[in-house]
Length: 299
Image (spheres, rainbow, N blue to C red):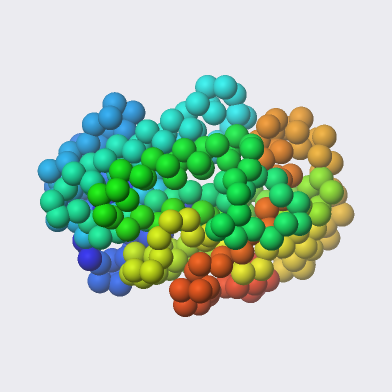
């Protein structure tokens, strides 16, 4: 396939490019700078609402991963506005442009997140579960709604609700490794909150699976089958590293350090299951946390 990709320089995108090309597909990147190679790069400016629609002709499918980082700093009013606008506005621009192509691409896999569900305690959540009321829940609702022009044009749209992506190349894991290796890692808050995670290798494979599987459409949870509590995650990471985990961070300290982001990213509980992925025949490379961490950390 000829696959259009936004967010190709991010954690998932930078791994997805070689994964797709090694599988025999051609990747066309959406870039903000002047394209260096018009055959493999197309310029867009989502903030200005500008995209080179002519450069998208002939793409068979699209993967949309671009958006402002949610963990780059404290959530000021301005940062929250950028987080929301970068997703809703950029996604709608791309969806409308794809809808106007002749012929339209067969599929659009657009990123979303398990933040859609909000803080749900021990409740097991599937793709049919209701949305939460938190800031990230609203972001995900608008993010997913922005793909509607593509769906209305007959493009099969998959809204990939990803959990915490585990990789040593970026994301949450590298930030945790230093304190844990120093023996000062520990649980966050009560430690009872559920964390839905997925290995980077499974994210890229799940995206290709979604592109190729015609029965998949709408929301699809991209999480490992075994959601774990923060306490379980802490013990497992400590065991893999061979280090003690005796220094917890109380919820009040997390809120002092990270503000609202602590409540929605660190302390919220989301026990999400990948119901649609499993039903469609997807086989996880790393279904359990310990095997994923041992692979990532060479243990």
